[in-house]
Length: 148
Image: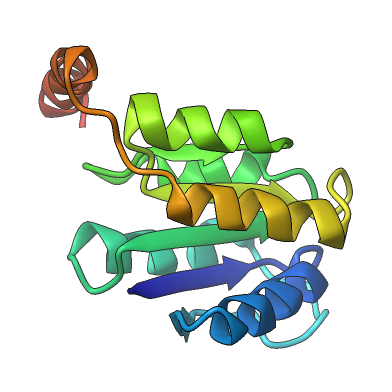
């Protein structure tokens, strides 16, 4: 399984920790930057990683910024991307199980590294439940068709 990573300068440190963590777990990681703590604009980097998911190059994306909110908003502008900003393991599990989220957004300033790695692990290991949730995803797809 290949995972796309991207971060702005605030999320750089946590992205690097996540890259190491995922590689130790056997995941292939595609790093879309940033590669330092020098200031960059999060929409540019979030879009690169989300496009890799959108185009099927990566199974999941994991994005980092100060709060996770900015990168999730940017990623959700791409058709077919369901980015969830998660601050706990339960939310990450529900984002996958009920919403088939394909991008996880985390905030370096609100989530410590230990918890962030647990959230990532839950996110990538939780399957989509399907069933009654499929009709809701179809409604989201229809909204995208009308609005994007």
